[in-house]
Amino acid sequence: MAKYREAVYWHIRRLVVSHADAQDAAQETFVRIFRSFSQFRGECSFAAWIYRIATNEAMRVLGRCRGGRVSLDDSDTEAGDMMADEYVDYTDLEAVKLQQAVLSLPPKQQLAFNLRYYSELEYDEIADVAGSTVASVKVNYHLAKEKIKKYMDSMV
Amino acid sequence: MKKDFDFGRIGKRMPYTVPRNFFDEMEGNVWEKVRNESAALRKRRAFRLRIVIGAAAAAAVALLLLVPDTHVSRERSGGLVEVEQAFNSLAGEDRAYILQVYQDDLFMNE
Image 1 (cartoon, rainbow over the protein chains, first blue to last red):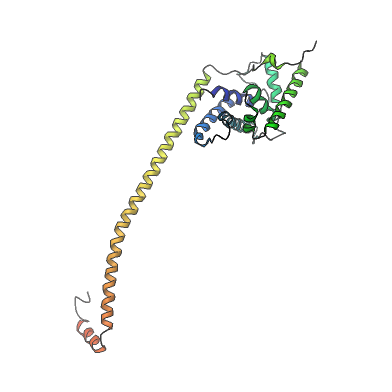
Image 2 (cartoon, rainbow over the protein chains, first blue to last red):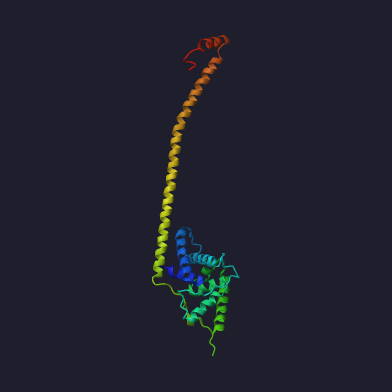
């Protein structure tokens, strides 16, 4: 657990933003990992399996907050927001803007960007997490980067 | 001059923070929950095992009580059938005589 606890928490935090929600989802992720450890068949990497559970938990928390189920396939999912949270350093303007840019992306692009840029997963691992193909992940990552660049340049 | 955004400049910096000792506390919470769940699961399994053992013991006792009883009743019914067959094979006069002699017998009609 020591190896993955921070990686899992930060992955969830980038998706749900609020520290309390991220804590809830991260704890539940590890409980689920322990519960279903015997069901891991090695069809994907262990990291991909863990990130998939973490992503599902993040989606569950987001669904609870938004009063419904949130899915990666929702193209019209309302963009997440940097709501006021005790554990956000608003003085780091550039970092805040970058997170706002990431949160404005559609879920699949957001996930592809976070898992590649921050978590440094391989494209095939990201495809396993997202239940998608490598080609689709590459397209989503490329689109995400382009949109983020445009967003950041427009805010300067 | 306007400068294009560069990912290399910001790197993986994020504005998010966590409380002090947060990760150790989170790990502690997870272990506690997992331990409690395992203990509850062990209790449930032990309870289920006790029920299965109890049911098996009850079934075994019922079997012990039923098997000799059936055997005895079969023996009893077998004996009566034989007597009836023997009686039927008698001549009419003999049957009438037996009935007459034994119909008031205290032990036969008890």
